Length: 627
Image (cartoon, rainbow, N blue to C red):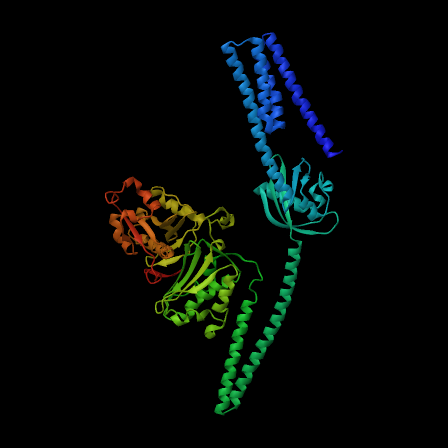
């Protein structure tokens, strides 16, 4: 059938319906006026008004005004112009016009949204398929041009057919099972096999709509998959060649060293001994360079992943420092998006403190959020790094050490846009700062996407690890799933609640029981220490000191504010808090005590402030060792 002919026929049917119902309704009202029926027949006029406003929304107000006006004229001509009657007829005509205007407005908005979504569907650069569940199967209801292009199938061939015409039954079952549990399928890699038999690699998403309908969107990644496979194969071959070359060079270096040793053993000439020594040094340099190459060759071969910093630091030998070094890690909830070799970077930098710190007694790892990202800080109280070496330690093969080296560390973290610098003070300790961009880190529990059920812990049996304080208490930061531990303690302290979006909570444990709690809350304009509380039965043992000390060391690179009871200002002054005027508090923190009406002194409350210290390790006493 010709499309223009179909449209003309469709318009003719609508026009006949509008004119016919309008004529019939007006004639029924004329008959009603003649026989005294004036209350029921006006409702018939709603039918042509609704039809006209829906079919021609841009003319809906005018058409309804014409119908209402004719009704008003018939009434006045037949029934006279009695004031009350005219007023009643006018209101009815006005209602008819308003209904037409309302229907026209809603229709215009509906068609505007329909055209918008239709445009998105038809002109999207992703393949889109509208699916309907008919009770027995998932049937294709509509497709856009991109879907037909990717699948190389005509729209007429796809419409009305089940999804299995190009998608395996197992994949269909898997996607709709996931829809049942999560309401959507996001960016899943799959393979479609259309009727022509050529597989298509796609990145597919599926979402549920209303009335048992679903929208399937996908993009063709066949070329990308082929390129990745080619790169993977090439990389495997290069790695094999590199491994063979490295093994051969290692063997050669060993033979050189052995030959030098034999030469030294059989030669007594001083000149020859000097040459042998130089050859040995060159062989050792070659061995070191091969070690660096071996560590660096895997960089970028695996995609970046979310690395749980605390887990990396607590694994292996870093936490087993004996009784000579106190290693304290305050990164419980921090995750960083980085190359898998980032774990080696953390181990290497922290390990350097033990190898080169000489006088080291404390190693602290903490983090500090800023406007442009996050700084992960690894610092110690060893001999530090001389000013003239702060840059050269990052040069290629600097320092004559083996392993991955700080040069390679910088290359590894640069994969996801991170930087590495040393900012310590010579003579007081080294401080390595890894700057992480905003999109490359997350605080677990600070958003829905970071909360995963598998990370849930049993709060009845809290994990026994942390920093061992001189009081004998273990101090650690709670994960977002453990906030109920703090809230149980806070039952006796205004029934305070924790919020993973803004809070870092620290708890001291003694004999496996939570005995004291403190919180660092992030406001829009500053950080606040509050919620410091020790139940009565645990007081007198220094547990409050333990938990405040832990919080200050973990969060001390931020400027901290607080409201202290006057009797406790001496307690907090031990952690470098100083009294300040009320107007020096950031607005959001000051508002918490708005009830004092600017008279905090009269309310027995003293505002206090702590400025971040450049020597974070040395300012944190009273700790023994990592446990």
